[in-house]
Length: 140
Image 1 (cartoon, rainbow, N blue to C red):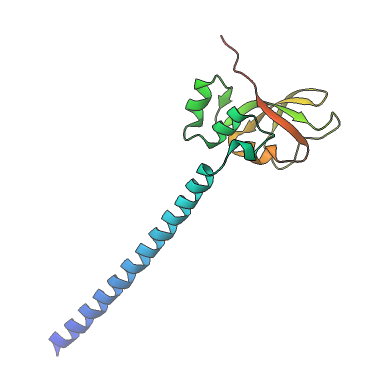
Image 2 (image 1 turned 90 degrees about the vertical axis):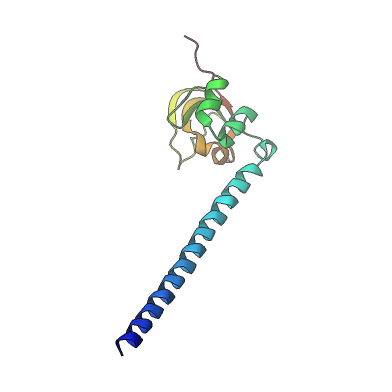
């Protein structure tokens, strides 16, 4: 009788471990799939799909190492943010909402501002934006 109880319990434990391993494998597969989809979506992007974003800024937005890219091309980059010149459709336009834009100066329809690199592509598609170009880092 004791032996039979032991075998039953061991069988239930083995079945539970098997079910847990199947669950963990399927979760890992889902994570890998979403990571691959994200990488594919970035690698399938093209600069010409963002005509209001200067090519160097597009390249920065998809770079694996934005800080290294910015340093190489003397872009004013710090803590995930880049200094840019935003050209608005006209001088009365307001900056798009929903972004962390730190406005430094404005002259007519041109705005010097600091924006998140991750927002560059989306920001360039806003109706108020005519063009986004980089500001070069001042040399010491």
